[in-house]
Amino acid sequence: MPKKDTAPAIPDVHWSEDMTWSLLSEVEKDDNRLVLLGKREKKENTSGDSKITVFQRIGAVVLPKSYKLNLTATGKAVKRKYDQYVALFQIASYEGLSDT
Image 1: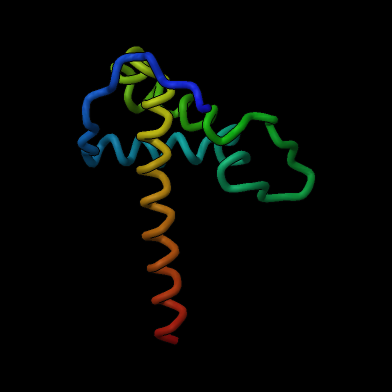
Image 2: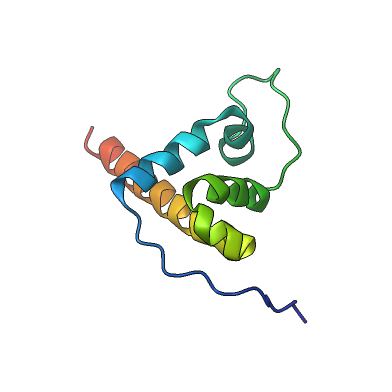
């Protein structure tokens, strides 16, 4: 049986434009990029962090108040937004390829 999260729930996150750019900026940082997007060059080392650890680390920067309440829920909120943008990018890329 999975563990139940006993930490307080975080409020709904309403992503502003600034928060979105902050999220993207954090994803681009080398330590985070290596885990989430992979290596640019073969010689780069991976950090050994899990993706959820990276999402929690990003949450500490982008959603500091929520992070103090519940780091697990904050990591999940960041992951949902990240996944949403990845899906949008994949759709846009696919549509761009089919137009050629």
